[in-house]
Length: 239
Image 1 (cartoon, rainbow, N blue to C red):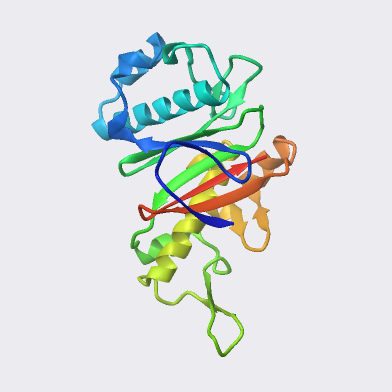
Image 2: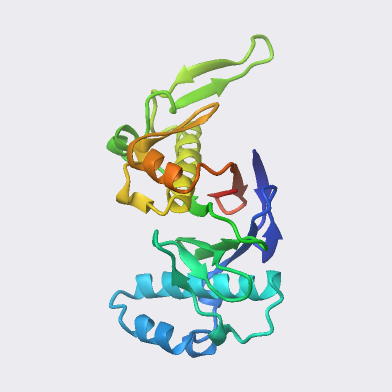
């Protein structure tokens, strides 16, 4: 399902995911929301962009958790760690509460659910032109098909031939965020091949993605994709 959403604050998606979306430049100084160990990690970043993205993600996640779980804690006391699969998690309360974080350009976002879950991932990406090898390396040919409609003929499906067309750019960006969200939910990220996920009428896992999905107990999940007014796509998946 694809919907139009605005860049505001916390909202609830159709699959029950609570999402906090903000600009990295809007966050307060690190000492206002990081724990002592997180401040130490923050000081180790050498690249300013990576530091800004990390800070934005942490602030989005902590403010989200405090609001949706109604935590009577300062942000500095909400410390985010990682689970066995490398996924962000908060271990307080009735948790652990799985978190997913994404950032792209000036934006960052965090997602969580009010109840504990085992499968959660989000990804944010701007729709923009990319080189042809990107399409060839990360997508199955069957994924890159466009639906063409007209007033005179039934809808028809055509394979992508022009990688520079706006329709192709938006299709591939949507697919990429969906694959990334699923890989994050699996705790794999880009350590797995994006081709291990095939998106069509049904989503098919193979190789490392299938192995991890089975390790997690093959949870039922719902994948939702939103097109933001800023030219970005955001996908969220949760059980």
